[in-house]
Image (cartoon, rainbow over all chains, first blue to last red; front, side):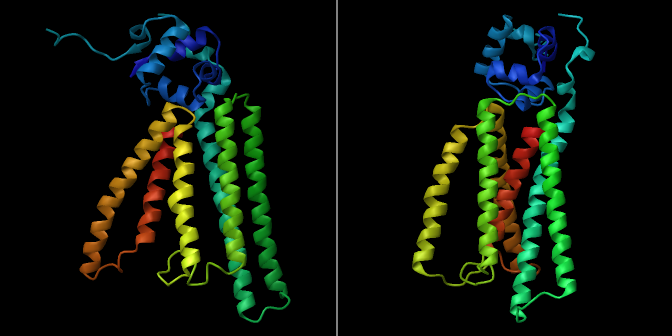
Amino acid sequence: MKNQLKVLRAMRNWSQADLGEHLDVSRQAVNAIETGKYDPSLPLAFKISRLFELPIEEIFDDEHTGEHDA
Amino acid sequence: MTNIQESTMRDADQKTGGNIARNLWMMLSGVGIIMLLGVITGFLSQHNAQGGGALDLAGVAVLGAIAAAILILAFVIWKLFQQGKQSGEKVPRREKVYNRFLVGSFLFGGTTGLALALTGSFDAPETSLMSNAAMSPVLAIILSIAIGVILPAITLYWHRHAVDEQEETAYRLGALIAIYAFWFIAPVWWFLWRGGILPEVNGVTLYFITMFVALVVWFWKKYR
């Protein structure tokens, strides 16, 4: 899943390890999320959302276009 | 959302590929050391089987070369470890504990393996990993408790205290693919044995194949 984590992190001048420390996850996990290789769980997504004070949908993009919505 | 460019990222974050390669080389060097220790013990066992006594010049040269290779690999591990420290990467407390546990297990396994090899236990049919020979009830009970009680307890603790959810996911996928590997490899081997193409199915080999598959998948999911 695409996301803005790398950009948000850069705005705070944090390294992946810094962000990992804030989220209580490893640097590898941060890297995997940033590169779209791993989608975080809902609890972790909420944690990220609270940390950056942004709604989840502004951080993560599921590329849903809404075309098939009723 | 923002116009911040990726070029503003801190250097440590651009070295992901380097970190993966570093971890992989450290692991491979460690495995290399264990294998070389195995070569030394095998060499000495053979020497003793042939009557023992003082080693000739060629024997000393072989042992010296292997010892030098072990020292080089140990130096590589130490150097790579230092590089990791100097990259400025912070390591969370849980990951430090995890790394220490890994190193401890590695040292314990290596020391035990070396002790077994030096005492010739691997050559004895009773304790050989690939043997179906009878063993004493006491040894059977000790090994059963170690594998059936102690190891599951350690494994349970290990999984409940994984570094993070990405690590847990890597474990789960590793276990899933490993059990699939077992389900598919075992019957195929069995059929090929019945067809006279392969030797008889060996449970211990299957056991190590599944462990190897789980390990490879875990490493790939965690560090790729």
